[in-house]
Length: 487
Image (cartoon, rainbow, N blue to C red; front, top):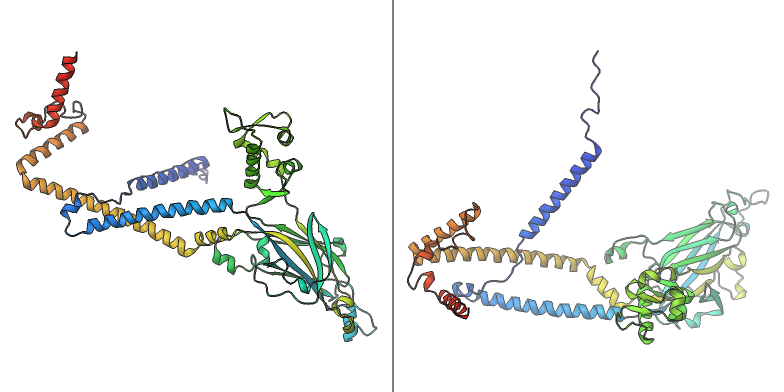
């Protein structure tokens, strides 16, 4: 009995398939490079065309090219000026005001007032309880740090993670918010100060993370998940709960908390990588720590030895970014304590107590404001109109280069037929001699480049119109005779 053929008899080994795919990708890449190398890039019209073209089209085209070169030079200077200003521009500090409040519904005291208790006068405080609370966290960037100061009452200073914030209870709601609260933070986490077993849903924290998305102004404006001024959540509870709201800052460029050794040198608490490197460079120049023979090599004094190690007498400045990595620590999140209150005194205080219902708790947090110039440049560079204009300019340049190439080909044909019409016999002889030399080079039968030994037609013809009657030939013979006399 003949066994059936194996299903793997014609299978292609995996490594062979992978190598074939890699070879196909390499061929595609080479083909793309070959096409790009053949792509014309010259957009200049030869001067000789001005004599044969009817009208002043060539002169006008050259004038436009000259204007384009001046415009490119001006744009390059402006771009360099903008980059220099961006490098010198220091982020300013602003104040972000955060309002925190909560409401409650279905609480026992509310059911008692509404007559919602059961027939026996009891309440369901278990899993089926409908007692809930809603927390709102709102934020707005204050243009003036003293703005809305008259609305604050009972102000107290609170020290939170080394950052000074002010907690205030006010009677009025936050004003209209013109900025985006979510732009300043990478994530927002609410941690509940109670075990998970006591939580109705079993969770001890709530977290929001900023979604990653391409830099596009229209998408940033329309995406509600990444652009909001108010964060709101709802949970079940029938008693007051202490929570901590942790805000992780989103600085651009990213800022770090400096180590004690680095703080002693730069005299700052936090900075970005570029600022740290620039500060170290200024420290080196002020203290004259550069070596004379190699300015990139730095002599370490006592503060620098404490930073890089006592065995480091000298360091190479280009390796500083790698050496300071472990001295840059992530900035601790801003922690805001808050108590979620569901009691009657907070939700519905007596009218004669002059206490507003669900009073706001306010924190003022210092934040780094992005550079307006950087925002403008980012808005321009990411604008769909700007990108479409750049693409259109590239397409026009390619079309212009193709047109100039066609003009050069047409001009070569014109010169060919013009020379043929002036002296057909001589032109045909020169053309046949040129083709003969090219053929000899192709067949590897040429001597010294093909015809350079004097076997060509033009070398056998004498008279003033021949090769030997030209000024170049006379100068060459004169130089050869002068060198022979010198010897």
